[in-house]
Length: 84
Image 1 (cartoon, rainbow, N blue to C red):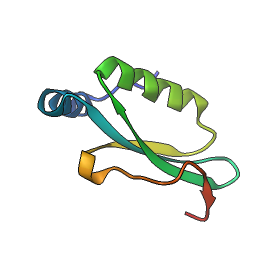
Image 2 (cartoon, rainbow, N blue to C red):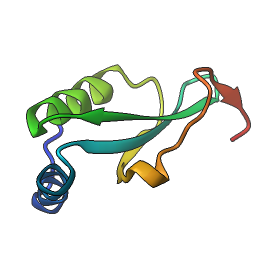
Image 3 (cartoon, rainbow, N blue to C red):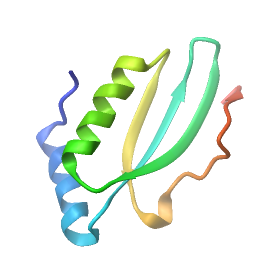
Image 4 (cartoon, one colour):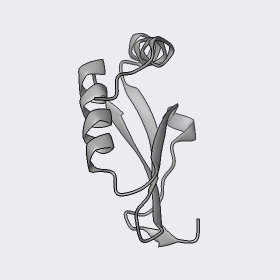
């Protein structure tokens, strides 16, 4: 299980308080070198934590995420690409 750090949890709670939603950018590279980037959002911290745990468990390679704003969301087409 990958728990959020106190700093990361506080950032998520701040977004919820200010905007009523948590925006996330995420990216990954699988074992074949195919990379993808996209965004998602959450209505509560529990859903974010579950998403992080599930992503960690199912990752085939490196991956990461970061908080975003509505103006900084990554909007890649829903497909992977090589050579990122």
